[in-house]
Length: 80
Image (cartoon, rainbow, N blue to C red; front, side, top):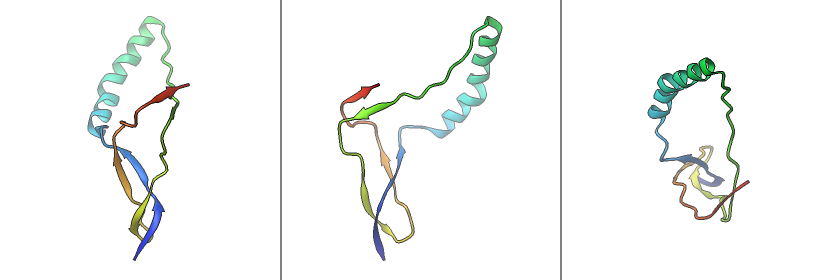
């Protein structure tokens, strides 16, 4: 039996293996260099507004949340 539900989204361009490799190999080097040179590393999240409808509903078997493979090609992004 199918039920209409809000879908989860997943960026298909992101490569989880490359992210983990970067975290294990590159990030420690950057942190060590920053400490040696007296710098601090700050992390932030880029907030954007998209000028398009991004609430997506689709059909899936009842009790299962569908995951949509998306690319960031929605046009105009406004950075705030």
